[in-house]
Length: 146
Image 1: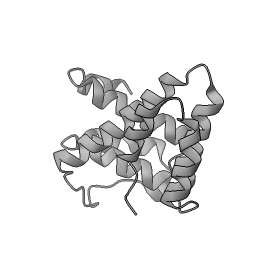
Image 2: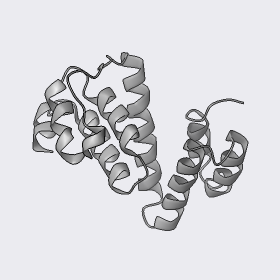
Image 3: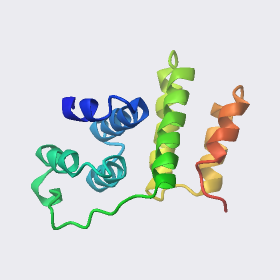
């Protein structure tokens, strides 16, 4: 954690995105492959950070130098960081109501793993954001169109 923080001293949004990803991983909202994909996006150009994460992964998911580490386009990184920023915004907005925030995350999780269609997740999330139209509008940027 310290090495990541020190690497991104001048890019707080990168470090914040890393922390958010680690929370999602710890809370089992992101699986091993998902966290590896997120780390590959965040750690572009920092192979030492990517390989250093091996100590936290099960052996069968270990990242090796033989793995093809793709360089993520800047746009992909920007989209990922904006998505993490949106989730943080929802968390801050509903900070006093943890149930609403976790419900929102649960819907995202179910959607991600194919349990809900785009329409279903929208119908479930819309009432949660009924008094927060700005969040609903921003949310639609992060779900695919039908």
